[in-house]
Length: 440
Image (cartoon, rainbow, N blue to C red; front, side, top):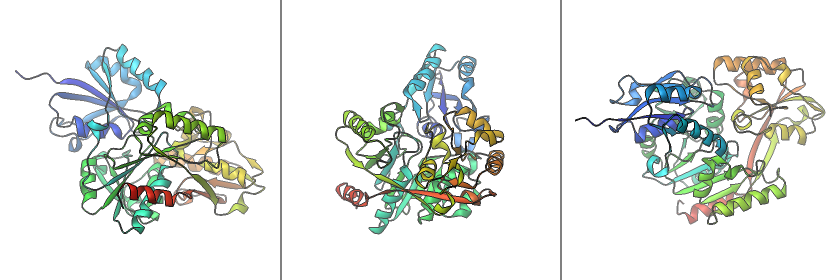
């Protein structure tokens, strides 16, 4: 008699849910994954996880539905277990979803590191965070530069952002800007990959991380896992570094799975200490020590620079910030607004009245964004609306604080001052940590 397969569903946001499926359920005959759901990122629902990825147990692939249909789907397909598989959600909101699932009669489950982490043949440094927008990529780049200076061959594996054709994104390698163009990368993907590539590093990403890891192991002597949002590393780390943000004090223990990262960390970096209040830095420090007293804690300054400060002083400016940091990351501002204030802008425009299409919709969805415009570009339509929104604003200067040169993506009809930011005065400390960990 054939054993009945347990019907399950994975809740996701275009990344972690696919990894959990690949490593835990793809070839597991005890489970039937009826579907995925999608949230947080636009345009990622109403797709199919393709047969090329889903394997022989799912010859027609697996449907991806909007998370708002969750209760209906549980009842329609008699789902027995729901597995939560995305990041950067408050503990309260997480339990609201759990309550919805339980009320429908299904079990609610979270998968931990032992079930989902892949073991590499070479040392792995995982750079993660307690929230999105803490400054992970700055730290990943610092580790990569230190390792390169020590003669190590370094590859960076980035947390997934497979928002397009999943079959074409199974395993991706990014070495130059042409690779970004060929892969039709969104603005968010470019923001993560481009700064690392400009430093001369190759970035791997995609959907199937066992294949990606196998590819990386062919040449890498050390792998850096560059995390996304506040998710857990997909690779088992030899050194786990977690970034905290004192501009959001308390968030380090209030968001999933950021608190888990904090409790697992070998090293915790409190970033942006030069921009935060002393009492907030102390509050974050005390929370770290309560959650993970064994972790080494490092204080790091984030220095903000502008390529053309004369375009800001005394001017009316529009501030464009990194999208995820100020949208689902919950920050009302980023480095762009700080630069506007530091370099003495006369007036900072409130963008809502000028915003067009989906950018206006986003500003209404995130009402905490009063003085900044998020650089959203998950589709050609959204990029078009972003361009129209920026160009409609009556101002002297656009302050662009995204990690990419936005003017190469869209044509902007006014001068652009680019903002960059870097964690400073921690290179020696990071080198010492790598030596103590016997990675160099």
